[in-house]
Length: 349
Length: 279
Image (cartoon, rainbow over all chains, first blue to last red; front, side, top):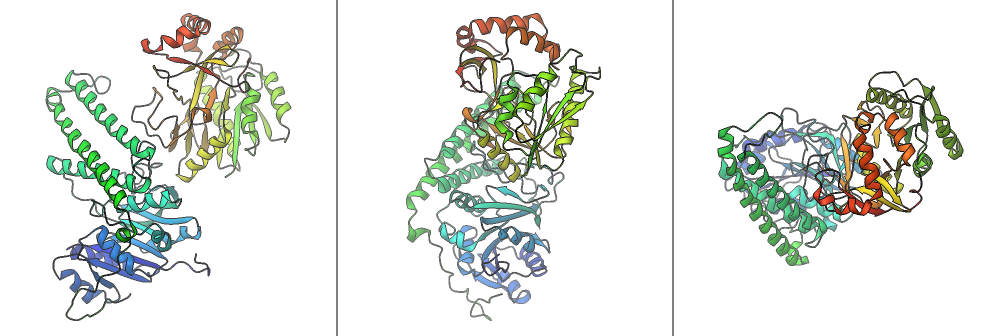
């Protein structure tokens, strides 16, 4: 609630990059919310005019902003700078909100200690509602970050970080921690963890409510594409470490612990490979086949990207920490609207 | 958050210290006992002695005495589960959580325990796995042999969730198939009976753990405990008792040789008395 006893007003920020086929249904679902948001902002970093045309033709109440700094953090910064709501909610451009999403998302803000609220992300995967219950959005003492944002604990629970696909924050609290920091290596997927951990480090309380649902189809499985997996492995570890260093500082115990945890995980991997090679059963009565034994060493290749990601994350985090100065971290003001034939200024929804 | 507790009245050792630690923080304590003073294995239990101790410390009238027939002659651990479930159901009325500590388990820092319980509640958990430090023998005033890693680091043990949400069904003794909030002594699992990669949600200091005076008993009581415990099948082998006597007699040798033993590593620790002391 606001000091006047009214529910907080909400600005929804959607960052998009050349995906009008996803953005259309996303905005369509937003327009069908039980309680409409005070403002909807689309920040577009597409190289073409298709998104601008879509917003212009079908969603005239939506504020369209152009991002020339690429998708992800920079685009969200632009949206945040233009937001006027008490709460700023960030949505992925392929997320389809439930009609009650906004009402459910805003409800936990009745508690003044709550600085951020995230919703359940339904990937339509078998068993995801019960997977990872009790480990939703946790920063574990060993430095690991758990996700499980598809789980449904049946009630709102306190978490350490939120999913980038559906997260919201009090605008005043977000501003008090310097807004979205631009000097990050990621392209947006780690934004939720970064913002959440920084707010948690500042003493804020974050809530995950399973009743605020967005549907987001799971990306097609890319298993088997080793090159992609290694790249993802590297980026995941790097972004994870950067988020920890930015939130807690390079000397925080949790940063040391993630280094130890990575080394332990790598050693466990080596031991598992050795066990497979010597034919030790992985479970009682199940010995590895010859094929499994021959393939086992291949999994060791994962250690390379993991370690490289760890080192790169530590360096990037340190650089980000050193560069943290008011002139560099301030939330940029919205750039001039993208030149359009039929619109001279952004529209406010 | 309203918290109740249940205890099984059967063993007077450390009973008062155990209940006193959390007495002020719970609304009601269900005291479950066998009306025939008989154990799950059919041996005699000092139930009246236990009830006397509990009555003497129940200054606020929080304890509810609940008699039943639990020596049913079946599998001891099944009977134990039945008695626990009966007591749990009774304690769960009007409560959000129910503590289920054995009477030889003493909270060293009740504030830390209830803080973790609140964190578990906030995280949506239905059971709290809180680390217990397993004490093997008292070898002198304030000196104990404690289960540890091979190189003398503290090691947690988990006899079962020490608190469960109301409405929980126990699967086996104190174990339940419920969403766990797991507290440990280090950021990485320290219990050898859990998988190495077991998730740790929170870390507490060893001084904030629960002390489990499991085998801290005089010789005579130890022999009796072997007879009444649900785990008696494991304990009654002569070698287990002889080993306990030998290790309690030579604690330094026991601790120093721990790195060379595959099982049962121990370290020598100092524990304040009370809560420790002559059982």
